[in-house]
Length: 390
Image 1: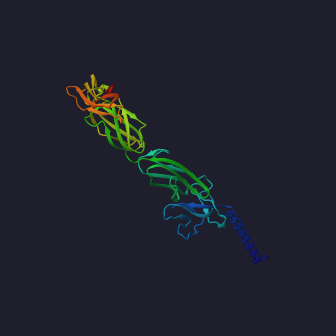
Image 2: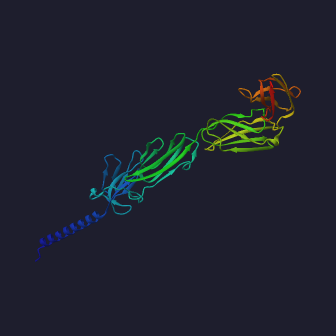
Image 3: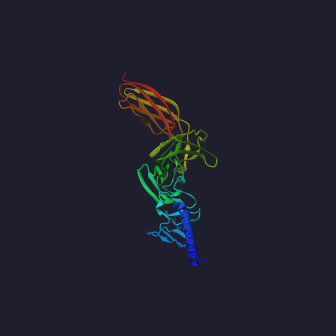
């Protein structure tokens, strides 16, 4: 007769032993799973192979329950990590030994702390370029959640743009002139930097004066007075509107405040006619400003001295000159024997086409230069030698 009690006891022992073996095996399998720190951004979550597993971080940024752990970040940026064991790319289990999670950070999608940190920077201008506004959108993206900073290498200052983020897009206000920045992304011991230089030129050129003046005469010499710190070029437009217009540019005019740029052109084709002219100033940001159109009369022909005579009577010399010039301005003389030689006007108008002037001179030999000027700046000269007190 078989003892059923003993048989039942042995069966129970076998069942318990098998259960223990299976439990140990399961624990061994679970223990063998890879330990990872999963880093979750705002509202990101992972599936946990334990519907009963529940946990809430002290700061409330990670909530686990009903088989899922989800991050809740008040700022909307940054990340929070949780130690788990990886069963597959989409399934995790609570850690049997949380202490085994140390360092590193794995992200949804396969990124890990061991992958190289990258940073992309988008600007409305090229590196080393010029921009005509003092504010612009700075867009920075990284492949990992990192700390992003901007370093002003000119002012030697550092600004923390975002302590924990993968993207940054905000308007930056920078100083006028040359700028030198370094953009830096840091996560752990990984550092990525982008060095950029650019120039801000937001101020328009200012034109204060142009020459010749309106309704005056011109022979081909033009001038502009302006203020522009980053001048690129000055362009002169001249001619007859709707008929013949010409232009000439100059790129070596000075930059700065209250500067002057002179240009000379041949106006012979417009001789005796009325033309218009204006200047365009362009800065390095390609900002252009134009002066008002000015009407002028072209006189490119020098005065003509038809006749020149002089007579000496004691200390006096009388100069008699016949001149042909429709736009006469004056007659000047220069006596090199004078103790303080300089140009002096002897006639500011003509009488029947003549300039007659009686001069008092010191004893000695005088080398005298005579010059006839018209209103357009054309001139013609003669020289005479006069002996006084011989």
